[in-house]
Image 1: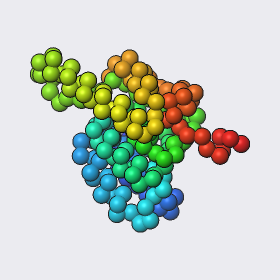
Image 2: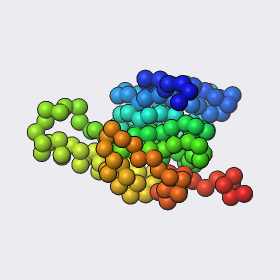
Image 3: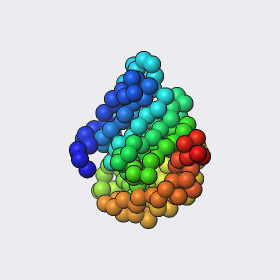
Image 4: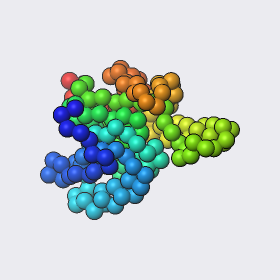
Length: 180
């Protein structure tokens, strides 16, 4: 990558305020912070571009629900990445566009903070978290089968979804450009 991504999520208005760029890692508390920043923008952006290595799953789901309620489209730009928890933001868009030169990837994620939990408690937390993610994907109109790639990929690796997988799982919507 030409430039390193910020350590925390940064919102920048682009395209004369018609859109916004969300760039950087998704940290705990970012959903609330970014929602406040989005609400302060006049006019409200109709599209949010994503460029993020991922991060907090809970914050991605909360921010994603806000984007969907606002009727906001999501997209990546040429060369951008959307990994880990970021695809949950992509999924929230009322329209979703990913150019061939951009990259969307998934993997297993952590739901608990503590590694000192008894195994049965940790497993219960993980299963509850996976259930919440699958419910969210279904709510957004995304095929929850995309999770099979996430569940099969260790947390320190990324499974990059192929363009046909992005279409099959409905992480991208058909656009007029694609139809021409």
